[in-house]
Length: 210
Image (cartoon, rainbow, N blue to C red; front, side, top):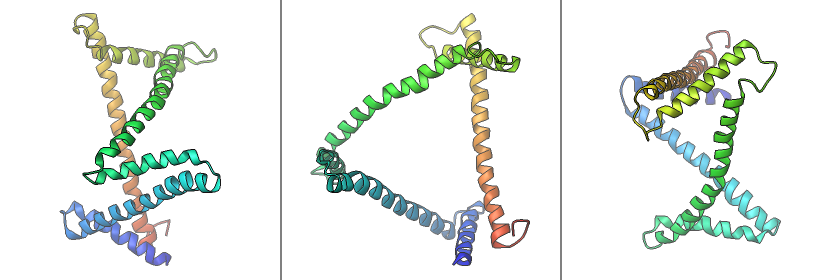
């Protein structure tokens, strides 16, 4: 069975790579197979984790009947597939958006705004045993944060010192976008190398991993 699995994985990998030549029926078959298997897998996982573990077990085994209200809201979501009952799904969507926004907005502001502002301001002198490199890094972080915020300040025309500072913010933004893009490309290249290693080492038996 391991050998069959390796052959299936290798042939599907080559089928996906065939798109480099042109789009063809072999590639479309592998693409549709991947999407179908992924959809089926995640459907089963979500049904098990949401319907069984979070609704059936608490209600039937633990007798937490107040959870039935959440199950009813979840069922209302499914009514959106029918034209005559889709208006009922708006109640569930409105409750979900309102509740999730009320929960998420304060936590995001605290975790991603206030905490980062505090860390940016105090990083340069909050720790007594920081090295010169740490101080330079903290200073660059503070300058980059302030200049980027000024760049996105649109209530005043960017002229004079404001324009110069915003240009510094653009530089930091381009460096950040470039580093993020490079990190993404390296991640994709790592996946490509992994597939080639699988084809050569495990499927063809060539190389140190054979």
